[in-house]
Amino acid sequence: MNADEFREQGKKMIDYVAKYLDTIGDRRVTPNVEPGYLKSLIPLEAPEIGEKFDDIMADIEPKIMNGMVHWQHPRFHAYFPSGASYPSILADILGDVLGVIGFSWASGPACTEMEGIVLDWLGKMMGLPETFLQSNEKGNGGGCIQTSASECVLVSILAARALAIQKLKKQSPNADEGVLLSKLMAYCSKEAHSCLEKGSMIAFTKLRILDTDENFCLRGETVKKAMEEDIKNGLVPFFVSTTIGTTSCCSVDNIKEIGPICEQNDVWLHVDAAYAGCAQICDEFRWMFEGIEYAMSVNTNPNKWLLTNFDCSCFWVRDRFKLTQALVVDPLYLQHSYSERSVDYRHWGIPLSRRFRSLKLWFVIRIYGIEGLQNYIRNHVKLAKVFEGYVKADDRFEIMNKVDMGLVCFRLKGSNGLNQKLLSTINASGKIHMVPASLNDKYVIRFCVCSETATEDDMKFAWNVITQTAGEIGTTER
Image (tube, rainbow, N blue to C red; front, side, top):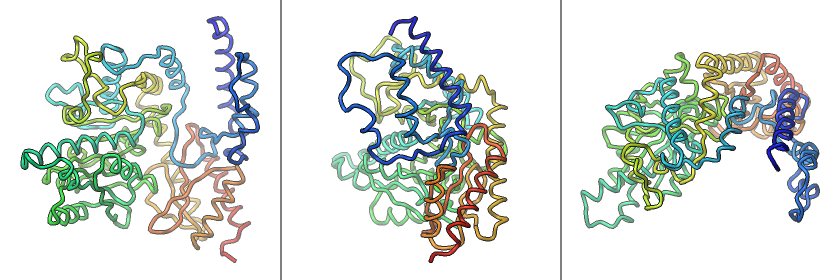
């Protein structure tokens, strides 16, 4: 493909994308296909001779779109939002064209410096303490962009593990590192994301999963008691992950209570705020971050709730040197003459290679402005309260979470099987899409406001589908 053909086909692609988003509401939210559907539509061998771009585009609708879950659909209410705004799409195009692999300052000066600046922008927007900002000359903090919240959690565990082993080696210089590793204990709540379990598996550290209070919140006294028990048994607490906006029900752990306990026991405190952290740009939600000054690291995902395309998981640390000492590998071929005066983000995470991800966050913040992004989040929260009102007005249903963000957890008053049948019937219709969660062994249905352009009409449409389906299946199991 030459430049002239690229211009021609690129314009067609932009038109196709714009039309897709303009008319997405006319599609089913979820596809009516079964596993393996694509094998009968696409040859199982690659073509020997190159094909025309028009022929490839002709296959998109009948073969690809028919098998897509449409995350930008106004009737998509599953998981959490997935950003796909026009400014972010355009920035991704530019980043893809540049093709920079920004593992060091020397490999991409603008890529590296933009990341630090934009993370400071967002950190200030969220009200993070100055100790997390790279521009704070009195501290060692800073931020970077990881691929996902799962990766942020993993690198936090690895950094905390390295610090803990280092401390134990000073106390027992001749001790085997494997023995010391076996003593380390991490903590999270039962509502924490499953990436905590995976991260602990990868790091070969123990993980203790703690109970929450009636609002599914992890409390300080619970953490304190668990640590005291483990210390008596010869274990070494080294890491606590709290969650601001849990996946199951958007509950908020009490970091104001947990923080001092971590500080007293020299334990790394991580705050996973993948979804609700974005809402900290609105002053009225800052109560969720009370105690954030005790955290060693924190993450949030603009690709969830700040209209930025995946992947874009923002990660801040209070002391970048405590992070990088666990991850630095510095071969000669990656060294450069500006190492002492610059940041090299290859030392901040698992992969060496890095895309120019800060470009799309820069575009989004500049196009929408802080006010525009605040209005977007506030609209989602307002609509969630509208939907909550519908549920509360129908005595067949019950609300299962405290609705502070854009997520409502609800269920029919009945068995888990009845609610599972309700959700599976709704999803099979393709009219709206939701997913379940388990809260205190009860099967609940998660309704999340996801579309950038969501309206009260969308809330009413969804509730009509839910109540109509509930009436069709009955409110009791036979």
